Length: 166
Ligand code: RP5
Image 1 (tube, rainbow, N blue to C red):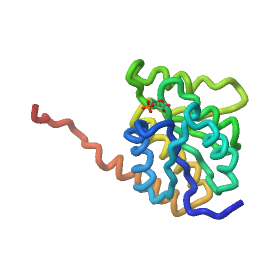
Image 2 (cartoon, protein in one colour):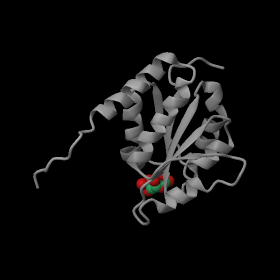
Image 3 (cartoon, helix red, strand yellow):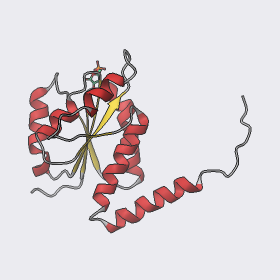
């Protein structure tokens, strides 16, 4: 297996998905995890998808985060061609608000799993946190950073609500 610095691949079906998927990238940045972000469309660039998924493990990736919207084949097709864990992020679509994306990604038949997250930003952030948790299993420094990230999140929660300006 080739050595590489980026253990996480963030792939997405379109440039338009980056608005959502950059939240996964930002979260990985906050945790000090290297990643590569690429556009890989299941239906517009099927050969690119094939080449990426078939070589991802040998390239040294350990986790794949795949975001797509609409009839979102990308996470499932990727999972079908790699043994790596694939976390799917349903991107919010215009027509059906991401319900189509969610159902396309989550309803994988038994045998090829895709770990499916929430629609939109929350899913992208949580996909990155899950990727971090996987990598932290064999990286104690990262485990410490993940603990610190969660502690900081907890510390930001006020005990009491305040009135906010309208
Ligand atoms: C999917 O179609 C992409 O994942 C994107 O969410 C959606 C719309 O793509 P664009 O028409 O914006 O390129 O393939």
